[in-house]
Amino acid sequence: MPTADPGTILIYSDIACPWSHLAVHRLWATRRRLGLEDQVLFDHRAFPLEMFNERATPKRGLDAEVAVLGGHDVDAGWHTWDRATHEYPGSSLLALEAVQAAKRQGLAASEQLDRALRRAFFANRRNITMRHEILAAAAACEAVDEAALQEDLDSGTARRAVIEQKKSAETSNVKGSPHLYLPDGTDVHNPGMDIHWADGGFPVVDKDDPSIYEDIFERTTRT
Image (cartoon, rainbow, N blue to C red; front, side):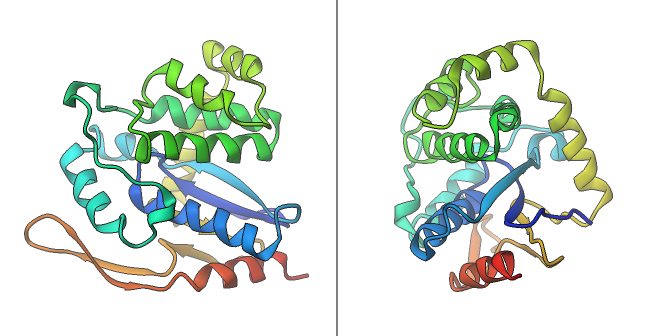
């Protein structure tokens, strides 16, 4: 089972996953509300859905998920895709690689870039498949050295990390995106949510309990 370091929440997810976008937003918001920015960091691990499913994640499926989840926490940043269909990102692999490359600069850099890329896609409708969009997101991150990130992307430094994290997810009990692991050995998949899929192909949220995030931080900071 994956193990988080003390003061760290380990997060397996895909950047283009609406469920993980909501979870990461709630992690950031709860950490800020509790004043734990200097005590807890997020260690992002790649869960590349396109590799597990061996296909690009269908736009129709993501549109259905966004339509449902947007009302659960509007501050996360959501927007329906109103650009041309051919501009829709067919892959999140380079974005996942960029987050792992930024980790070479520290967890603060990688978590900032991860958050910026999620918002670029879900809130601002940017095609995060494209290298220039990834670098634009990086330029807005205080902790990220954009030039160093560009060099690492161009040299493929972090591609192996994405592949190895995908293999690690397969051989452990990672259930999907998002799945969180805490320093006390506990873990939670899609925190606070129970869902099922209706016959029409859209998700139904049976339970949404955001209070679980305070428990996540209590467990992470417990000595």
